[in-house]
Structure formats: structure tokens, C-alpha cells
Length: 532
Image (cartoon, rainbow, N blue to C red; front, side):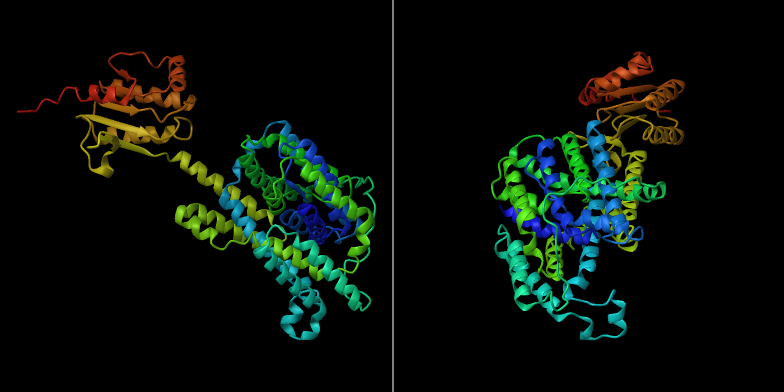
């Protein structure tokens, strides 16, 4: 009941944020939620319109059509269809792992910036600003530019909603505040005086809708927004689904949820509505209230159905500034100023990635997807840099019996004329050149070295490039008349090297099952003969 009573005012408010006819927000709260329950693995999520997805839709379509027009609705429906189809295909192909490419710093930077943009977009309606933009207010400040009644409704509703969220977080305060504001607006004759209200909403179930053919020019303009809506909306779903799976102690099936959420978006587009997602706030309240199965979601949908069939006239007198207060209250929970500071203490590189994502999202609005894309590219570049520069240390025997970085701890070599290395990475195309360079440079600077020991336990995989590098290292040691010692090699890597014919034991190659066994053998190496 709580979620159902939240869905109606939030759905109408988010439809306004997306530039859609207000009733489409109720449509998006009805059939898509039913489809998600039937086909998703996470059946207790609050599926419907969300602030971030609605903002992305409204921002992406800016300049392509007039908000609320038939062309705008058609483009929004196509965004829902294309995004849903992409999610469904990803789920069927079991590509849910791709979502792991979006790291927490990128998502946090985008979310913080998007929340600020949502707040900025709602301030005019919240305060009753009559001017089209804030420029008129800055050039000629005057109270006459504000509808003071609308400001009273908006700011008063905002104060009540914030108070209710702090004192009674599980109480459906939004529907109570919206209902009270509508009643007061009717009593004051606010709509008759020309005030901005919700107005007449059509009642009844949504009719089947087809947006018509999508021109190539419009398709190319929607490609990037669709990708970002797909990404962000499912990350919203993931944040809620992981909480649900932890509470139910079941493994989260992200691929099935991709299919379910994709079908929900498709159904929304075929109702003439816009893309949906799983709301973290509504999902959290559903779980907190004790929902056990998808029947809780079906009950919430039934309340939305009742409103759509019989109670839409009751929303006529609700001031639009109250809807803005509903949106502002929902997005203030997304603003967490201390997030970047906490990231800075953990990883300065990732904090910079989050900061750049935040700044670019703000700077490129309404084309906000550039912030996410640049953040992803920076994150992948950082990942590749780390893979190309693995940690390679020369080990020594620590007094506590462990093998540690010899230079960091100022430890003696394990044995004379020996270079003992450990690389904390896979021996593949990314790391192989770094290992080869380290060994080659050391051998060139120390011609007396006759033994190379690779502590190979951290190496989980070897590819073709790694095999070639291993063969080159083995050949270098044989040319010097020395030995390559291999310790702790794991079975997958050992099988690859055996198939390549590189593990034939002899004077040039020695293998040890454990580091302890290798340490005993290395300490028995012959000492260099002192010259007279």
C-alpha cells in the first residue's frame, strides 16, 4: 500500500521531468511493473518511473521535439523500446557481466551531477517562477516574477515531505501532501485564478500505442542516449536487486533481471509511455515493510489501477509546484557531498575519475551521456595501465619467514648470483613485456647472475604471448649457462607450458612445487669462487 501510494505522485512528477504528458507517468507505473514481476528474478522491486531515467529522457530529447508533443512522445517511446530490446538481448546472451565495467566512482560522479541538474530543473516550478529562465530574474529582480501562491504550495510541501522523511520514513507522505495540496488548491480556486495545476488527466487503461517509423536521423540521435539509459537504469535496478538478494539469501540472477526489465521497458513504450527502472527508494520501502513475494508489488499495482480508472479527476487541482517538491525530495537523497572526499582517501586516481565524470555531466547537459562515457574510458584506461604495469618485486627472506620485497625491507638476496622475482599478475600480452624488460635490464646490469627464479604462484593464466616470453627467458638463461627456477606453478599455467614443450627438466630448468622447497634448493646453490 505504501509503495502504491508513492507511485502515483512520483509517476506524475517524473513524467513532468521527462517532458511527457502527466498521465504517462501513471501508465509507466502500471503495466511495466506487472511485466517486471512476471519475468524478473527480483520480484519485490519498485519498478516504474525514476528520477535519473526521467531526467535522461527529458535531456536527451531536448532540441529534437517540443516537450509533450506527439513527436516527443514517439521519440520517448522509441527510447523505451530500443533500451528494452537491448537489455533483453543482453540478458538472453548472458552479458550481465558487462555492467561490471561501470565502477562506483563513475556511477557516483554521474549520480551526484544528475541530482544537481534535477534540482536545477525543478527550482523554477518549485518557487513559482513565471519567467522562462533565471536570466530575467537576474537582470530585473522582482517578486512580481514569482507566483507567490505556487511558491507557498511548493516550499510548504517540500518542508512537509522532508520532515516526514526524517520522522516517518515508511509513511506514504507524498500522497497525503499531494492530496492535501489539491484540496487546498480547490478551496482557494487556484486553478480558476490561472494557477499552474496538473489539469485534466484521461482516465482508463492505456491504449496500445505504436510510435511509427523512426527516421534514420532520429535513430542516430538516440543511439547514445539509449545506451546510457540502458546502463543507468539497470544499475539502478542492480543496486536494489543486490539488497533484495542479500536479504533473501539467494544468488542474484542479473541476466534474468535484464530480460524482465527489458520487457518492462518495451511494454512501457507500447503503452505510449517512457522508459522505466527500479526505484531504490520504493524498493527499499517495500523490503522494509516486510514484502515477501511479488504479490506485494501486484497489490501496489492494483492501487495504481484504481487511481487510473476512477481517481484521476482528484489530481486536477494539484499545483505543479507540489509535483516539483515531490521530485526534489526524492533526489536530495542522491546528493552526498562527502562521496568524492572518501574516494580521495581510498584512491586518488579513482576520485579524479569520479570528479571528471561529475564535472563533464554538468558541463555537457543536456547531453549528459558524455560524462558517463568519458568516465568509462578513463576507468578502462586506468585498468589497462595497471595491467600493463604489473607489480614485479625482487624477493628476499624476511625474519618472520615470509618472502617479501627485498628492496623495500632491505633484505639480502636469497642466494648469490640469483635474481628471484614475483609478478603479481597473469603472464599474458599485457604483463609479459614488463616481466621480460625487468629481467633483461637486470641481467645486462649484473652479468654475474646465473640463476633466475620465478615465484609463479600468483600467475593464474598464461596466453600465447606469455608462452613466448617464457621461452625467451629460458633461452636467455641457457645462453648464460645458467638455470631458470620455477616455483609454485599452478596447473592451468603448467598445462599451457607443457603443451608448448617448455617444461623439459634439465640443466637449464628446475621446478619446485612450493616456495619452501624452492628456498631450500636455492640456498644450496654453489657459492662463487673467490679470486686470489
